Image 1 (cartoon, rainbow, N blue to C red):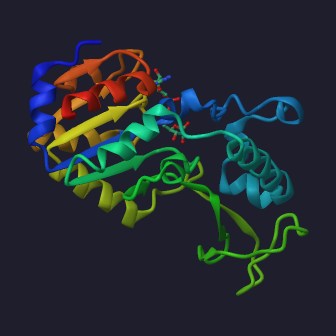
Image 2 (spheres, rainbow, N blue to C red):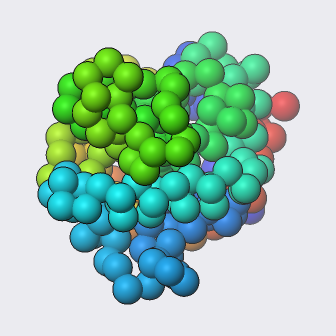
Length: 242
Ligand code: APR
């Protein structure tokens, strides 16, 4: 694809680039989407009925096991060319911040240094009672218990009905409101409040680029909407800087 000259120029002049990413960013890695993970043993459950505090209180064993199976599936996939392009961008731009809605940890595994995780991280575990992140737990207990208070441990991800982590959301607002270029990658842009973040960049005059094989509700707000997979388009965008 021909990358627009304006995009190349804005990128060359940029000091801070933010990438706002969603599930499509990991599509080419083969990460099962939230709903696609309902196969085999889990086909009788709806994801929306497992990813809630209420479901965990009612049946912590089932919810823990569902996340354990997703964690295992995710541990087997690798970051794709899109993730690696954003890692390479760090060597070309003064500051690169990734703000992600994904919980799959692939940005960090790829080597991204500044990652704001709006919806948590499936590899992290926290106490259901006190919200404290816990590093070590017994793999024999299902679910394991908190070494500090004895409460049940849960994945450190944002469930339906829960607020986004305030500190991470503030970091995301600051990054989106202060960047020179915003890349909106692989997100349908319909899940709020995260979906409001790209508008902050639009309002502050940043150059806003969408990368997605499909048009989305956000497309008309972007300065340019590049249609295609991020694993192909992000390396092409980087070529402007070489
Ligand atoms: N490259 C770029 N984008 C892609 C690719 C690809 N290879 N493949 C698909 N997409 C796009 C789709 O066109 C779609 O617009 O990725 C987007 C994925 O949209 P959603 O599945 O709605 O994911 P997301 O926007 O991240 O959803 C936000 O909703 O389900 C909850 O908590 C979950 O974090 C998630 C949130």
